[in-house]
Image 1 (cartoon, rainbow, N blue to C red):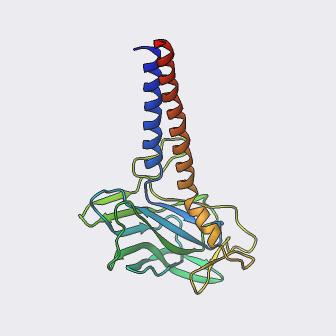
Image 2: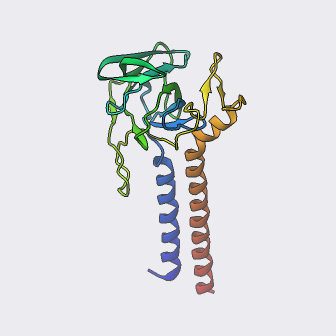
Image 3: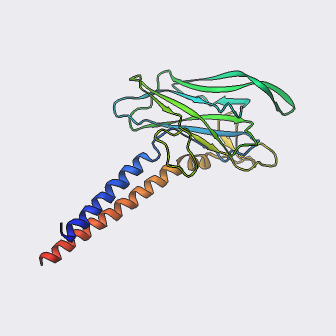
Length: 245
């Protein structure tokens, strides 16, 4: 294999690799806070669910809340075409929230289609208000089950480990920030479902930026890789022409 062929092959491999990685790196159920999720406070989060199948649509999502860190207050934002149900259970050890004893906490949230579906090539975000968040944890792991209309169930339950490669089916992980002074986190949900920060300013723009930042990064890396690969192919063609001349 001559030099031009080797360069062209390397460029093609680079393009293919980047396209594949950029398309799959974030193609799983994930969770992102609107604003921040502070320890000991309240937060509004989005569970982002992409459809990974070409011939099936997502019709159900089940999210298990961490048993090691019970969350007393869980409320879902209405979503047309979907029914949300919060399952609760008695606590072995009561929680104290705002001076009150809480004897039960949510263990699971289930969204079931009542007409809407997440079709191939689409995604949906399910919004939840959580509180109070634990003060003795740096992150919360939410194991999730994604059901398609062909009865297939994808289990997003593998807990990512620090320093280890990402699992094939990772569970959504919510990273918690340092506790704020007022223990109310960085965002709340108003009656109309819109977020507000501590100063009372709308956070719709911040929400969109936070929810899509990972996908934007993937797209940027993918485009950059394609450009680098294309440059390699062009270099190989030019080198071949010079050798022929």
